[in-house]
Image (cartoon, rainbow, N blue to C red; front, side, top):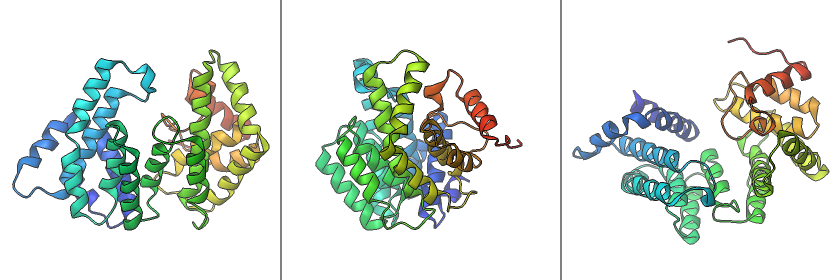
Length: 295
């Protein structure tokens, strides 16, 4: 069943399905990898197994910054991640979509591969598909100051990449994701210890006219897209929470109407505003006059 899902001709959908499959099958990693020992293994099985190992390894490391990850956890992380390389390389050589190469971006971040190699990897991705959304989001992480780049590189990429994209394209969210990464890092550096202090800092940042204008522009372009797209709800949380915190309630209402009932674990600002992100989101919907969707 999983392999048939990965067999789609749509490269965007292929990556989204791999994301879900690899997330759900971490407990089945050993069984997935046992199929790699067969003669002429299916390339998509190697892709699936490699991506699942990458996910499992990052779960060991967690999303904490390096300074907060102990040496023993780093050791287990690197040991688990290392064996994802070969199946992903093989899958990348036998398919014409950048899905495996995108997974190698996350492998490279974890294994601290030199930036020059990460740049060459990105060039290979662009040569195959310059509009691959998942790979763009991976590249944005590579360019983050906390990983292998700088704030300037991250923002330049987020602003320039979607310039030729049509209205409704998901790449218009890159600038909002870049602002999220910048704000999250700034909060971490300041060590604020109350939700009140965090909320004020976020309101000041997202309320800045230059930031607010970029987020509003992204919202206007994003709203032209398909509201039934598989990532629409998660994207709406990312964008809608930024609009709300910045005081743009009219646009926030239009965007959050597509956000659904599930609050994502990462990428939205709700978890920075309340001990119960879902409850905070529900209160915001009520405040903005958006009826909660039926489940």
